[in-house]
Length: 403
Ligand code: HAM
Image (cartoon, rainbow, N blue to C red; front, side, top):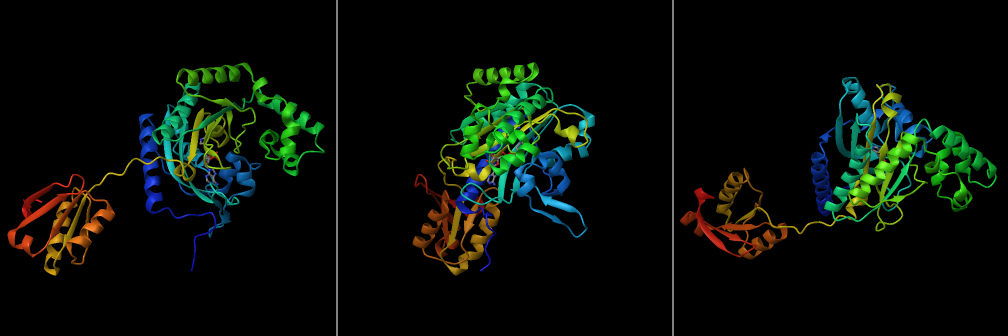
């Protein structure tokens, strides 16, 4: 038997209901914030992710589904959504047009990670990207949007917040950090030794306990921010406080993608095990320029749908639609015509075989319809149909033409 690949799941039945329910809620919230849908290809040039997510990141360095296609192009399945949206934004010359552009998207992302609970190789994200707003109010709006979506889904969370500085303050901080880590370089793990050359900031979220102990007294970026970054971070915290959004400051939150500056945030859940990040995002003011567009401030986030599906509190399902069953062979044609008519406006489930009342009502109950009708020789002769409401158990008799 051929099975799905490791870390790649089918979504069906109850899971599919959760999935579509999530998309519905998240889409509604994003539209309320003035965001528009965007769809970008699953396959992009590998160079796009190398330049944006960064060659030193685990995502690009270890986890890409990368191959040479039949036309000799170096391509890969997208590991995340931001890079493709930025490419589309520049390709459509929206950077040159100026103004504010806000997009949301959802779809499959691919990362060749070691699969475990909550960590897949093909997973789904819901994300938003906002271009053209440099105000920190937009950063706050992103966080509020995630919070609104999670609240509507009945999901509790902890919000972790950090500022990654900008081109003014980050370089001198980086030098300070490198000097600090070099002091203990004989004791740090292999990954951190590599990071020291490629992307020193990433040492801060090393999962190795020994490294974490060594870095306890490392210089904190939050203490080294320039005035503009400091002001923005202070404003952001104030806006969140004013709007009742609680947060924790995590000075080690650096995110796994290289394009961030200033605001970085992650939403975590304590109820899904070790893969606890349910959403993450931040500001990336340099990325549009870095991908050859006109300098454009930008901020966004993405949520991991599979992780959220574990946590969603589904609303009580209400009965909907009709079940029409035939009692005799000769009634099947009528059932089919009635269903065809009714399906213009309602959901209708039918069975192509004649059955007795007991079997039909059992089927109707199983598929969760609200109205139940059966057609037998009596109904054919009288031209009437009895419609039973399975919620309140009332009955109504109408003519076939009125159905
Ligand atoms: P990210 O933090 O890499 O950010 O991913 C966002 C979310 O996707 C995570 O918080 C997690 O819930 C989910 N996720 C990531 N990897 C996996 C996996 N292997 N299996 C299941 N779920 C996973 C980004 O992707 C950025 N593009 C977010 C962003 C948008 N920043 C600015 N705009």
